[in-house]
Image (cartoon, rainbow, N blue to C red; front, side, top):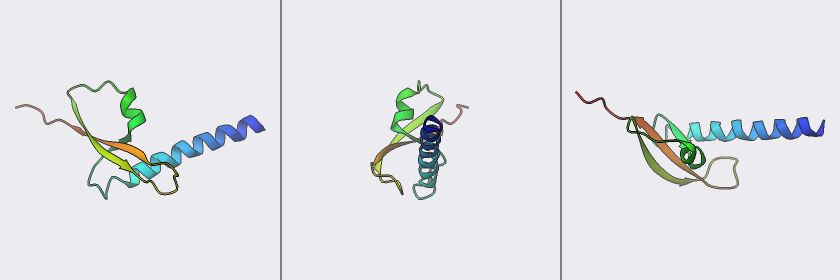
Length: 77
């Protein structure tokens, strides 16, 4: 039971954080935001543009989180 509870708490926190990041899209007029932790794991190519949005407070979280926006680069004509 102890291991199961820890797993549920971990998954709950991840989902909660993802929801809080999603809630920041509209106020910042961005379609898609990701955490700096995820950004560091990506292999950014030229198809997308990544803009650092800065460190923000997310509702219900004690630590501030650095966010990046992602937008697809325009197709060259």
